[in-house]
Length: 122
Length: 109
Image (tube, rainbow over all chains, first blue to last red; front, side, top):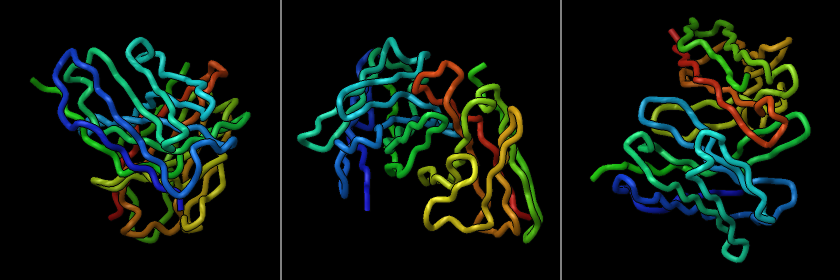
């Protein structure tokens, strides 16, 4: 059974870079069928797609975050990572990683990691 | 438009049928997926490719689509179905960009 687990600091100072890693177990991140994605959810609010990556390194980012986001993959460790620079309090959220499928007419995320709360505060 | 619009809240009597909708221009070209999120938990995929259920999802959950509107229907709602429901889809750019609806809070009375 595929499982994903987020890890990283729970507290980040304003203007610094948020860094999270998602470790995939029970399956290979190098599967040709899937992408891997990051989604966040501010407290009490809805879901926001951050970006997705293929095992080859191809990336797609939310246009509203693109200037600050970098997603990378390490196939040797079966992990992918998120970096979000110049964070402010509005970046405080639960960050989820998930396996993603993109077809010609569809997309979905399944399964999801349990999520990790990142608070931006001095 | 790259937005998906959902009603903020919907209620249903126990055992009755409820439809949760998601509207957006991109839904004319792309299927919607639906996620259930209970408090303090990660989202769970309940419908993909418009009307397919992942393994383990009860068959009371179904999906449909017409024009720019996708719908999630729960036939015979149970108390455990009380949750937030989100739709998502590709945006209209044609790239692998994703957009989520704002979510619908379902209350089972």
